[in-house]
Image 1: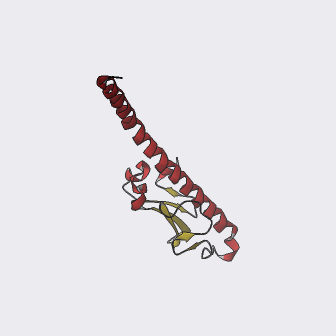
Image 2 (image 1 turned 90 degrees about the vertical axis):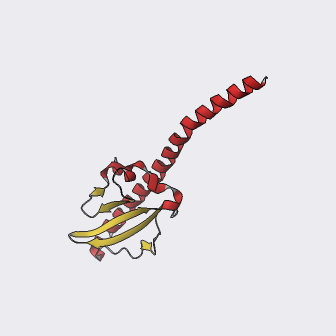
Image 3 (image 1 turned 120 degrees about the horizontal axis):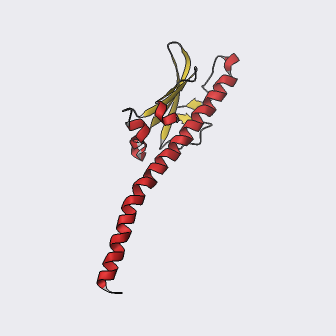
Length: 129
């Protein structure tokens, strides 16, 4: 193999890598977002199951650590709080150290979190589609 052939192979590989890597990064961000959304729904189901106990969530989330969530805390940190007119609001805060804040559904809305409330309203809606 000559030097020119080797340079052509390297050029072709670098072009393929420059196309494939951004798609891979997008896929990774989307997969962690999907897991976080799944965990938020899981938390909502637990809260609704505890409706008679007044939506007690102390056992679900403690200090940003979610006991039932599968999403790594390096990607999203979960919290639950009351809000005016809402029994609860579940929030998944994207963590910047992992690059999760670069997820397109979050950057399109200029936010770094996703929410799901007691009336089943989700935000940003692009993340839930």
